[in-house]
Length: 173
Image (cartoon, rainbow, N blue to C red; front, side, top):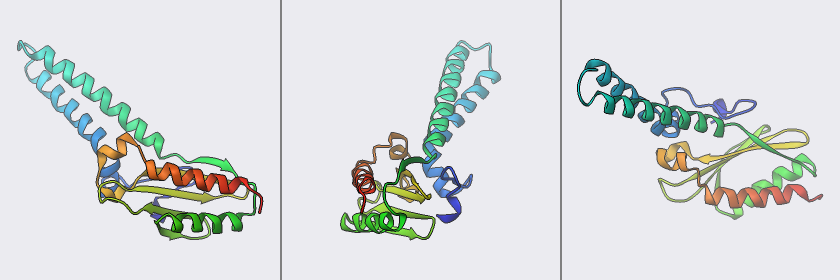
């Protein structure tokens, strides 16, 4: 996952399984819109031509807007740090392990952790460290292969653990 963490967002290589999981539904909608457009152009004089045009334009617009929404969700959010960075890191590790989260990557720059839940429903939390702030992102784990959950962005377990981590960052140690 390290190669996918950029300074201001998470990045998935186009065509990778992670990218397909995260952007699968928008890509399918865009493809459907393009295919519908092809059938419209193929037979514009047909009595069903306007139906193909309506389907084409609407699915293409929905696909593009959901793709842009998913792209925006990959940007990091941040919160201020009111304690020493090393104390925060230790607190975050403790909170994650006590709540049955698996730490996938832990280094000087970030922690990547995932909820240990159902195969097709797993949250992924990334904490990126700055001097006085913590950048974070919470998404559906790309290895869960659940594009629908990635679109819905519920992340119930992740939101709960993030609130605990934020609360620990606000307290001076």
